[in-house]
Length: 143
Image: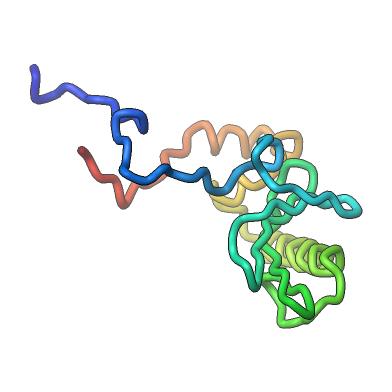
């Protein structure tokens, strides 16, 4: 029986010599560096030049934008923007077009794509698909 035991691993048990930093803090975390701009929240991730920010609208993350010395850019186009809000809007518009183009193909969305939809927008058939969905774990490592 001892060979079938599953042990839990906690971060407290694995104290490292160096203090660990929290990464990818959500915009609601009191330690997150958050900038609010015209309907978007920018959460600082890392970097000095460029500084990297995750862009949120409501509670959904759109992607990332970058603050360079002379301009802003986003992770989806090659445009240089003067303001952070312009880079965020460009990212948002790109993501909306990408969503429309994937749904316009007539193919039903994959289960992974369904996870990106808002809960209220899911149909009963989609809920049923997600209920039966078993993700394929390809890179699990046991301790």
